[in-house]
Amino acid sequence: MGNIPVRAAMTRGAIYLGFWLLLAGTDLADLPTGLAAAVAATWTSLRLLPPGSGRFRYAALARLALRFGQESIMGGVNVARLALNPRLPLRTGFVVYPVCLPTGMPRNIFGAMTSSMPGTLTAGTDANGALIYHCLNVDESVAAQLSIDEGLLLQGIGETDDDA
Image (cartoon, rainbow, N blue to C red; front, side):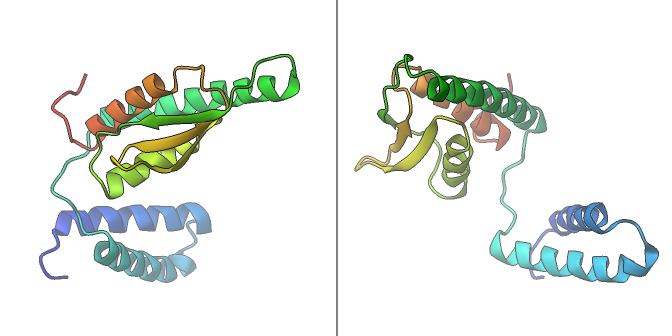
């Protein structure tokens, strides 16, 4: 595997094997196939996404996951309320958000994550590299919510010194 750290390979292999066991069960007859699948998945993932030098901060990632779940539920209720009550104001439009995340994987994760939230959808970038979001209600504090999510993601991937 070249210069790939053994720890990264072992961690990924364990995750893939655990995922296999979760899907296929713990029948010993299936274990050789599961091990082969885990080795193949580990090899492929290490080739396509080599381990970085950063360290994840799991507490911040857990806060982000909790917030994501909370915001998804609240956003879904809000979108349903807007859709089912024609008297409520629906002010669709675009919000430009100047993202601080570096280009590449972190920014792509952020765009995909925030597009999963009900009421917002990443629509591209502007000339300055800011993300453009299509929103169902531009009157809401979309940029403030995006800033909170981005801050938690930055903490989680180790891009800031804050772990608060």
